[in-house]
Length: 110
Image (tube, rainbow, N blue to C red; front, side):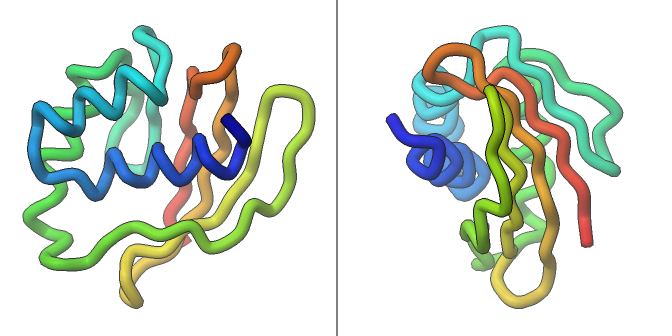
């Protein structure tokens, strides 16, 4: 799977409203012990913690969806990309890959 494919599938996780479907996506995209941090979440570990945080955040998104804006740069096992939440929010994420999955996500809101 390409870097772009993994990032797109990661964003699909944030867009998925069904918990079971979201967690199935997580198993295919994220390592079991994946780490997530953004300005609202100091450090989440594993699928369950991230899925819970996504489920709590989604009502505030309304019908808006996350989309990939640009993969800005990649090197070694890392990528920096920008995303959009509809037309109301943007941000940047740095992801780290272990094998063919994402093991760490550090998010920034713009």
